[in-house]
Structure formats: structure tokens, C-alpha cells
Image 1 (cartoon, helix red, strand yellow):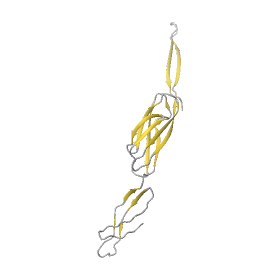
Image 2 (cartoon, helix red, strand yellow):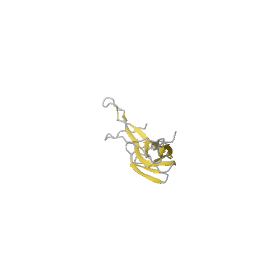
Image 3 (cartoon, helix red, strand yellow):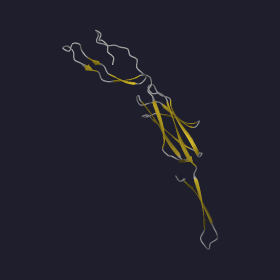
Image 4 (tube, one colour):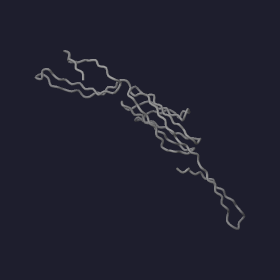
Length: 173
């Protein structure tokens, strides 16, 4: 730590260079005259220099999904500083899915995919006064609905009736 002498007004001042990270600071008073004064320590103060580094993760609530199904995605932003606040922008490739406010460091969006294949979901956080920007990518696999077609003959001895039924079937796996 650093030391400074007390002025006649009871204040100590010193200048120090600190790196851009959070710092926990306390002040400790050690009297030169222990007969007149007692030692004391201030409560801890958390000091942020610059913006704290952040990271982001995206999770899908349904993986894989089928075409036409609503899929929820949640982006979680964490950092070394206070809980991040602000906006997260979501996109499916270059198509915007919207912007959502962080609540408790999380933002969620729901998307429905019309096409099968791989969809790259991107989330971008622009930072706030104390947390730096972050981004994440999640690859969502969307499978097409498999159809089964069945054919059934009507009852024996009756005129022939064919009944065809088309039913969607989720793919295995």
C-alpha cells in the first residue's frame, strides 16, 4: 500500500496509478500518539477504473428444433464489475431478431425458423458505463418436419374406399 501524512484539517491525499480493473480499497489510520488517538480502518470501497471485461453466452431452450417451432434463446452477460445493464441485439445471420434489455444480466428472444438447416444466432452487447462490450454466437440446428403417409382400405365387402392420412413426425435423435 501507499502512505500519506495527515494534514492539519485531518485529510490525507496521495496520487497513485492503477490498472484498468476493479480495486478494493481501504484507508488505515495509525496514530503517532496512541495516547490521544486510536487506530482505525475504513470500510472497503470497490473502485472501478475503466470498464470491466465481460463475457457472453447464448443458450437455446430447444435443440435441435423443427421448422415452424418457436425457439427461445437467452444471452447471459457476466463481468468482473457490477451486473451488466443495457441492450442486447439478437440476429439470425444478418436478419435482426430484435433488441432486448438486460434484466439481471440476461436478455431473451424467441424466433421461429421457416427453413431447415443451420442458423447462426448472434448476440451483441454494447456495454454500459462500467462493463465493456461482448458478443456470442450459437449454432441452432433446425430440422424439417418428416411426414408419414399411410393408406388404409375400407371394410371388406363394401365399395373400395381408400383413406390417406398425412401426419407430421418429429425426426429421431
